[in-house]
Length: 395
Image 1: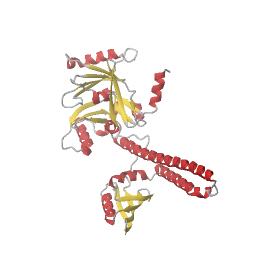
Image 2: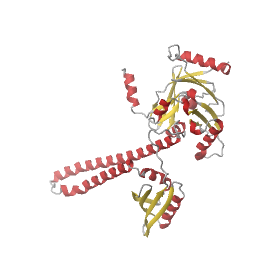
Image 3: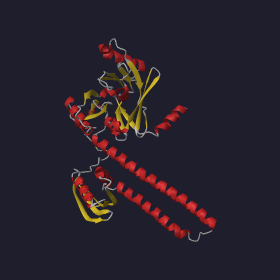
Image 4: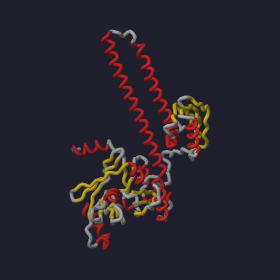
């Protein structure tokens, strides 16, 4: 293995897992987004447009989209689920994102003069046209890579020539740019870097994690589950790092304490003075174990806490949270006033995942109020996707 290959293998261990689907499997269309469509309504609007354009229902499609910088246009792509190889779809669950091979062409294919683009990838060749309304393509067409008599892929130039012949009069008299890309995509945990080459020059574009979620071809339930896992993993890592910092500070403090005690020769009370430190470490270790039990249980406490986060405010603080059956949390809380506690209850009662909210032991004090709140969730509020189960809904 060469040095460059070794560096490539090393770099792959630092990136998220990604898979690219062949371009010829997709129907693509650029659509205009109405000005009165709010940001939180955009995904629903795009899905309605797809339903009106496709002869298949959404349950039978794998789709995604990209929004342009002006937020006025979206490049929408979809493929009939059974067009994808079953073995390929089975691997999607192991990936952290699944996108089309033509992604870099759709996102960054437009140049200053808006000339057409042929994008040659591992399994397909995609053709794009552009206009002055948006940086997103206004026309798309794709072909599978041609193979020779021995079922081997034709070389780059031969594949381009076959694609140009297929396009015929559509590109007559035009200068068509040709990009060569591949599925060896270098990405970090929060950004994706797509790469291509044109006449020896490198082209690349950076895609944020939020954009990746809209581009992802997996089912909506799978994507929501992946988002939840990322948030949970981030929370656990923050807790673990915080515990590590505290532990290192404690170790440093212990050595400094030992040095000073040795210097003044006052070590008789060492065990007694260190007892609170040992107890604190034990308490923090117990907290970590409790968090692990929470994470691995069927009670879904993290799902519940994340779900009510938008309804929290600086005026209300949880001091302790316990599970209270399979669909309920019991939280001990403090508020700046009795009114803030009641406002918090009113906000939660409007949440469609919650069946009821009960406040007990509401006591006003000089510094605010304390109370106990029982959050009873609907039984089907947190449905998890079973591993190995085929999910028909798309995303």
